[in-house]
Image 1 (spheres, rainbow, N blue to C red):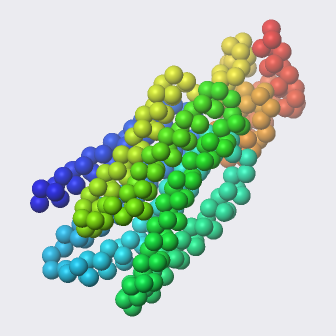
Image 2 (image 1 turned 30 degrees about the vertical axis):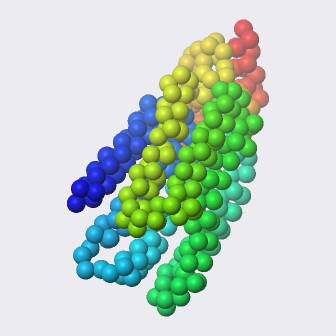
Image 3 (image 1 turned 180 degrees about the horizontal axis):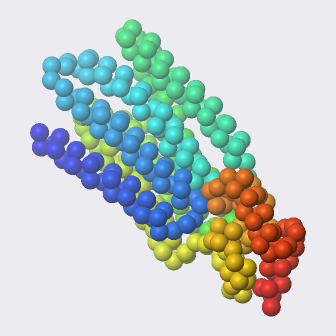
Length: 314
């Protein structure tokens, strides 16, 4: 009873704290990558609750022998798999936005193809191997799936490391540090599962340890992101442009969104790149660009960029 209480309290305390922390950062700062980041962390916690907390609760059902408990564990394990895929997809989404990954659509297609294969393997294990008591096949599939799921978890932060060269400092340093931190943190639950150490004392002990570790690995990168955002306030209109340019944007009677888009046009970004930067649709970008032309009397992007740059030089 005491172990169960500690388990539930630790999960129900740490999970909501992480979500609230991420959402507070998103509310306070307007960086585009924070939108998918907050949803990534929310789904990470949802997965923890569905898999670890849910499994632990099922293990507390009285009257189950060891075989029954194993069947319950395996059959309930397939339910959170879509959530795992979604939070990993959102991880790739927010990290790709941070480093402006050039082929996000291609990466997404490859990712979902892999997820379909993994889900098929998980269903095959539960539907075929476990009920038929195919112990050898069950162990083989289980081991392969464990390696596949956790390998993609460790490899996902490579988007930050590889893509860091596409952005300038201080975002380049941030991407590299976050990439290394995530790899180090994700290696902890991966090593615990693949080594089999946590299974030595039974399923309940594995669930108790792994659930807390699974949540806690997000604390170091979240703290790093919090510290960075505190020292680097967002706002595309003011990140790379002189004060005189941002003052000019205000003088042209542009609203905040139009000013952001005008500043990004001056930096030479395309509509697609602006949409990715601001986490809006391309149609929204086009509508705002047209509004900027109408208010300023300028006719195209070149004129707008030259106008802002001349004012910046002046």
